[in-house]
Length: 386
Image 1 (cartoon, rainbow, N blue to C red):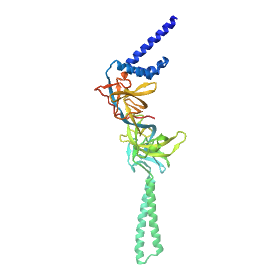
Image 2 (image 1 turned 30 degrees about the vertical axis):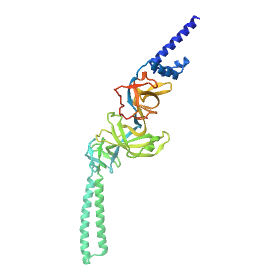
Image 3 (image 1 turned 90 degrees about the vertical axis):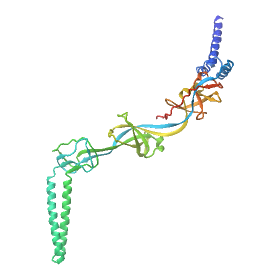
């Protein structure tokens, strides 16, 4: 019997303590409801909220002083971040077109060459002799052709002889042309403008036809191959801007653009190959580097509220709006959290006032007094990472 009286007394004390708590701290009701204390005592959270409001009014308390901020429109940003591999705009390996011994190397690794510059010379004595012989033969054929032409005017030469002289002249011209070509093959020139790679050759080395001699890289622009999910394919286009960060140079962020879009989605990964292009003005990018590529797509516009305005109950998140000088509880559906804003869906309008400080003393219908200190949302654009 003593235990029963003690239990009843404990319940009475607990109920009294709860009533005093919710009377002076109405914001405690959602917390007690969430942990199940109110339902355990057979009470209703809405009835307690109403009773606390009436009790507060009977105490004759004045308006609750609060600090507020404004609801704003803000666009949610959909971002796609991908890792890609870089390669030079042009990368060409110069090869030998003839067999021979290297007599001179005119470039060094890391130097810049222009298209047509001489890089390597091969032994060319035989070709030089052949060109001089062809030149002499051509001069003789030209003189013979002039003599035959003069005789032809006087009728002292047959048509057959004139044709033979013309043929000999044409043959000599072709022989000289072939000799020039053979001599030019002993010179290895730069096919494009760019930077010379490491040269693993020495003067005196013998090279064969199609042996790789010098690599030239045009890295004035870097092409980046990366992949994007198929859900954003319809939002991409050639020339669309991208933000590029080399993984080895975290403090460097460059702006480029999409230069090519593949036509086939990979069935295994459900991604599409895309090629971006970024200028390498500082010449600090190299082919083969890994890059983080960021693309931003505009999304829907949502309401932005201050994170301090968010409150929680068993029914979910809500904020206190100030309407006609009184507090109104407005449920919200959180769509995105950022460091300084929270994007929500709610029955609020841009510019509407919501409470960020003093919420612990609010209840539906409470009169509020807005403090002169007003908090404003920062203008940082939110992002959504995928």
